[in-house]
Image (tube, rainbow, N blue to C red; front, side, top):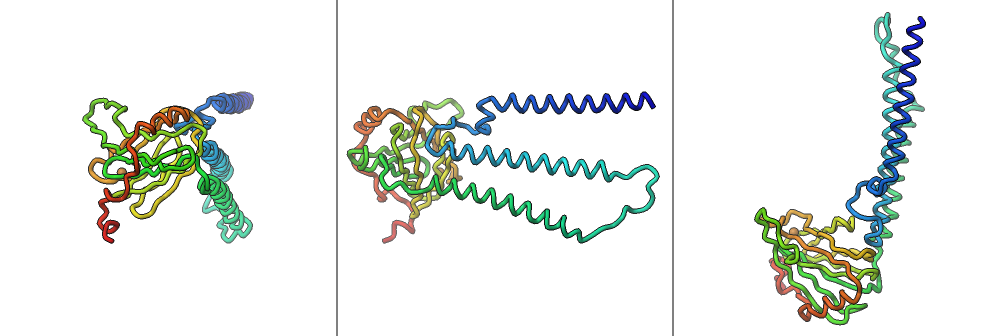
Length: 285
Ligand SMILES: [Cu+2]
């Protein structure tokens, strides 16, 4: 009897120590910046949209974890409390139509879905509200298998200028990143990116901006944000668009306004219009 008591006391102590250790590890890891941003591949303030997107993700993960823990605890409790005991004979009591329980597991998931929907919708509206007076408007054109950047006159852009990008050549060796088409954006200025395509569906993706959007022939899409951190960011096409999809790379440089103006001054004049489009349906007039 005495030895049994000691065993259960020891077991309780082990459970307590493990629980405290787990809570401590969680609290400690909560301090690291990686965890605080939910392991997302960027800093919180990279653009004006990244804090909104980060918070939506991280809070959704926390909610999912809490719901998961409650669910796992209930499952474990059922397994332990209603286990088959020694000496039990036959089937346990068979029950059906437990109305309170059925209302519970219909109402709670509906509440969860509507809550996630509410916050997603709220943040999507905040991110996708068109900016009537952007400082910079760039038409980014996807083409098999590179990018054209048309900087449109207006705001801080004094003239129509463009850069025509060429495809990266991947051979298994490191490539010179300076040969990639590079979208320049001034830090702290509001930007509207107009996304179009010359041929098939591409997708404009800068992982550090936490946004990705399709470029559909004949149907411009838009992104609105203000870059807030100077730096160089990798970008790529995120929609399988043909044989050399993997070579459809670009970079984004967020720079001071002076550097931005200096870059624009060195670009070719005018915009690259739709005459290079290859979509037969779009070209027939
Ligand atoms: Cu593509």
